[in-house]
Image 1 (cartoon, one colour):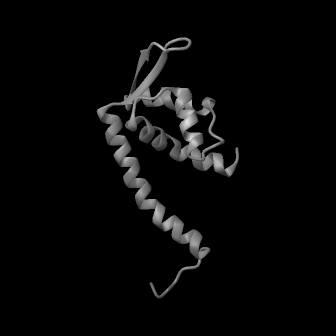
Image 2 (cartoon, helix red, strand yellow):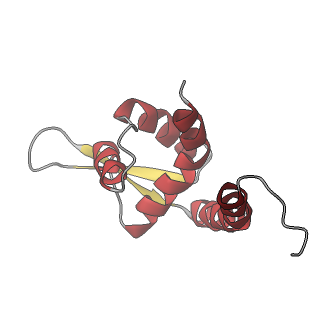
Image 3 (tube, helix red, strand yellow):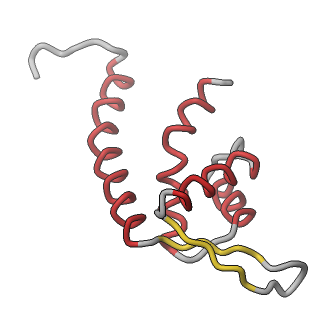
Length: 114
């Protein structure tokens, strides 16, 4: 597994919750949206296990809706618990993002004057 895949694995759940929050979404559509944001190495095969886990944890729920073309699709939407989980993810992301960017920017060198 590549380093990028390992990093993505940790944040993909939060990204999926954020997309579903905007509007009910089905699995393949999630894949397309993630790729549209530049996460081109995220496959449907990695999305569906996350959706199942999120559903088990009652962070999302799914509703089968008739499709204009083909079989019914399962559209996912956030539950109240999912909203809370997304807010927690955002708080954690916002707390870790600045120091990581600073480390990368400074090449790991600590500026004693700060």
